[in-house]
Length: 475
Image (cartoon, rainbow, N blue to C red; front, side, top):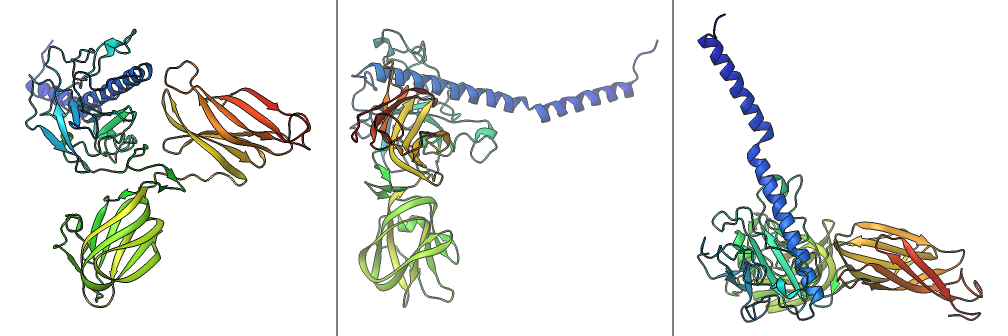
């Protein structure tokens, strides 16, 4: 019996090294650890979201900043709470400025010893012990929980609306922007590089504690954007300072000039050749209500509003100082074109509101009422009306995806006109939809006369009961 030769040992070691390399390449334990930490982050924030919602729904005097005062959005000490304990790492600055120019104070509410306390002395200032049954037993913190490493949790709130937002940064590549399982840019929040959850993901737009953020438009309702009707037209328009301003044909980015709030800086545009224009690429669909432009001297200018890459509106006028154009249409970009001579344009601004999505239903469908329903797993839109003269109801999530759509009725006209909702167990979440309208298919006197009609439907779409009311006259 002989031992291994030196060459045989080298071969075996080489094979083992190759197998280890293959294992690391395909399995990649570092990435697996990142993925597991990210899953924990998302689960942690979901647990906090449920706990805070439970606290708010069960307490009409819910105190969202505990021992602190006036730290909500828009208040005198508008603040952002951070899960990093003050004795571990002291954040080297006292405030940050968000993407809209608002200043937020930074609060490190706890030390390492009381970091997870749920009595308001932990990193989250809410005192959950005010409740008879605690919705959470301890405060979760980020698996790394380090400001220097860039991984920690943050919390902000709006006292007026009793809403809140929780943020975390994810490290697993596949979960990040543009990747196969992109979570951060598809969570319905305002920041493409940060995971956001909570009852209002638009409280802070540009959470720069996590570094430079490219902000997008929120998909949740906020007071700033107003109530949206007519496929995006809003009752309160705001400045659409999103996207990129480009000077063509050189495609030079002039965003810093047209938004520096300084009318002494300007860009030249001329009729060419080649024609020099300024394009505002909004990078999303918006309802454009008006455009304001500042000209440094009298000149002719045209405004082209684009839809499907084709100009649909052209307005020309002579400018001196500020001038305002009423637009009132949807677009993803607009441009300034020169008239006669060389033009110098300084400040430019557009006003309107974002269009998150629009939905068209089948032929014969008429929508009469819509309600927003807060349910245990999401926000939904409940729509009622008629389809081909039958009762019709649809449920959509906040992204516009149809969860269910169903119609039912008899041989004549059946229409739902209104929706109400019911929280049966008073836990803050909707359990049933109550729909009402009229029917000419059911009840006394049908179809000669119409009757009132009411139906109770579970959030799953199952009909709980339905009933018609009336006599031989129209009801």
